[in-house]
Structures are given as structure tokens and as C-alpha cells.
Length: 207
Image (tube, rainbow, N blue to C red; front, top):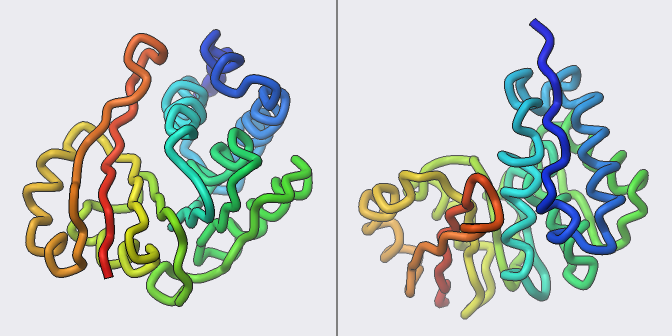
């Protein structure tokens, strides 16, 4: 059954500012090719802006320095954030070849010079970043062992999570302690701006 892509919400232009045309270009490419290339499901098109693009973009002000997006997939949140924050250096970590191809195509098409793609699993990267992010990859108890080792001493984890993030934190206490993840907190972004707010797990990582 055909599904109609969501129209651009009014909040998009204010969130992306002068970069809105790039956001529109990326979203149009995702609508045109995302399902065909196995990047998103057909049910995602009616909520493509709300659930995916703006859900990622609302977190853009939190980032700084060098950032790794683990399991970048279709470029959510990494490419969206790279569009929003050209002053930040982004590394998109993705093990699947066809998704790496997509990410590189989009970087070239959008003319982004602040993004690189690594075909790798997070566990195998062997680099450190100021901030590490991920979205919709796995629960914290399995995500922390992958992401925390990539964070520089004193750097940050900024993980985009769902409504059950508090339960995930409770279930991950031993893992958080093992990987020296401290000052864990949940921030709710976009209330009064987006129709669906974004929950972000933020924490420091100590060596």
C-alpha cells in the first residue's frame, strides 16, 4: 500500500536555519531511495521529518569538537547533525557496505566537508573522540561497552534514546560503572517545538 511522505513541519526551517535547503535535499533523497535501499521501512515515510530528521536535529546544539556516530545507517543522526553543525567534525561508523555507499553518496551530493565515513563496527575503530553518539542502535547495557571506549577521557556520550531510557539506565548500572561512565542524566529536547520530543542520555566518560 503506498504511503505519503510527511510534509515539512514548520519547525524545520527554524531548526536548520540557513542549512534548511541541505536538510530538504537529504530528506528528499531518503524519501526517494530509503525504502528501496533498505535504509528505512515504508511506514516511516509519513513521519520522516517528525520521527527522524527533526528528532535528530533538535540535539545539534549539544555537540562540539570531534564526534563519532556509531551505527550511522541511513545517516540518522550523523548526517542530519553534520548538516546542522558544519563547525563540528563528524565520523560516521557503519559496518554494512551498502549503507557506507549511501552515506558517501550523500556526503558528496550535499557537499559536506566536515564528515568522514568508516566502514567498521564500533568495537573495532580504535580511535577516540570528544563526543560519541548513536540513535536506535541497542539498549544501553549493550551500547555502552561499544561507545564508551571511543570517548576521550572527560568526553561525553550523547545517545538519542526512546521513552524507556530511564529503565535502560536502571538495567545498565553495572555496565556504566565498569566503563567509568559518570554523571548520567536524561534531557528531554524539543518540548513546545516538536510534536514528538527527543530523549537524550548524556554522561561523562573517565579514563
